[in-house]
Length: 581
Image (cartoon, rainbow, N blue to C red; front, side, top):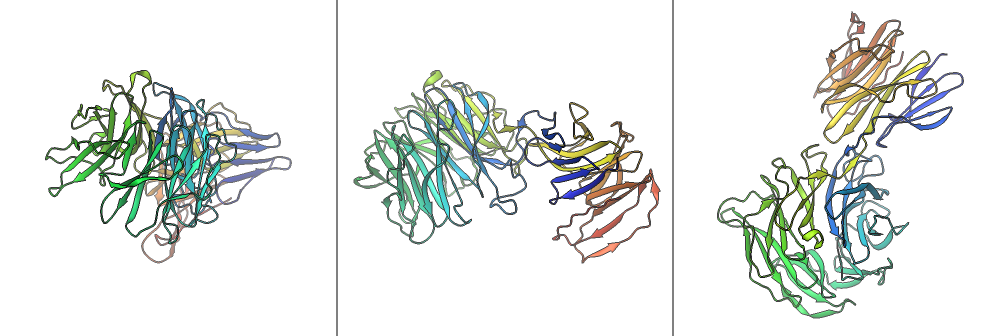
């Protein structure tokens, strides 16, 4: 049988064919490799261990129910190479969620909530006493306008709305906040373009019905109006907004969104509620560049309590800049959290009598590496004796370019647990290539979890069936990429880029390594390889800052490797090479 190797649809679909059989190998970010043969589509076995998902997961939020939690975040696992805004693939961030039990342990696996055209971002989640509502924003018909949508999630994690609830459309980028009065949900929205920069609120019933399409104006647009939060206590709402001229203000509204009295000054728009009163948190950098964290109870009528210093006493407090703090209620105490560069996510407890229990703060995850914690959210709950469940974006595994979502619990007696990743998945599999040896095919590809990258190989028969239960490893490391494979009639050569060099290993058709350590082939990257009659030809790109030129090299033999032919483009060019025997 004479097999040929070809490439279709750029880089992700590879086709091998003979007289009667077509094998299509599709690898991408499906977290599994597919083989399409004469017997139909099949998911190849193995390489299925769970770990922190490839790509960035960010902007986590969490809300408690009566006996558990729902954590939600924006997730780039299906388009890990496309940063926001979406560019080449038509998709970007999606919305994922993970249910946690009363002790903070994951229940099942993360599940997809929203996957649509463009980036779905900025999720929010709130419990109304019966179900969670998860909302997010994304492009409507273009990148520049915005559509806010949502779905209700039951306590068991089931999605109650088969089609997302259309909450509000804007002609420009929109910012939004979510709360519940214990029955309905309320979404406050502000767009950025002229004519729609007022703050409006949309009511959503427990059945998922929008009660006032288009929203009700809560605050007219002004040049100094920016940043806001909506919260609820005792069945009414509090809108807190920032004013660049006069500082933060608040306004009360009843359940039908009629204003209650006039506006009043606040110290912050970071507002938490326990259903009876509010708690404000904020950070300040003083004239000596010292950071302080403050808190304050405010009654439902807007009467402020004493300002409490929670952390900072004249020494430098290593807050992220700008500092951000958030609050939660666990049935007995207020909890205030913030992120530091040295201790990660830090908490302080405050009693209803305004006693600060943990001045200066304690870490939520004492084992977290330095500088690892970024965006975060926290939920308190009275079940299991109280305490908080926190979620945060963490860089310890994948670095800043591949954040993961971690969670950690602190008991009501201030006993912290161990943080763990909840944004899990099977490995992403991508950059495939294959070579044909008689009636067998050897396939190579990249397999990746957050912070873990391997080049794997597997043997397939002529029908596309895997000959082994698991693939075998060719190489591992954070700097490897672009694996390619060729067959010279006797043996395979797998080449890949590693840093600024191209290296390779020879393998027998049975999958036995001829080279125990990689062969150094040439400088450069993005290689390809083909074999013919006992000889391999390897090509690659080698970027310089000079104009285009080509360096030809006379081909000789060195361990049956042919020397290089290199095209040197400018650094800003994108070159993809392919070679076939």
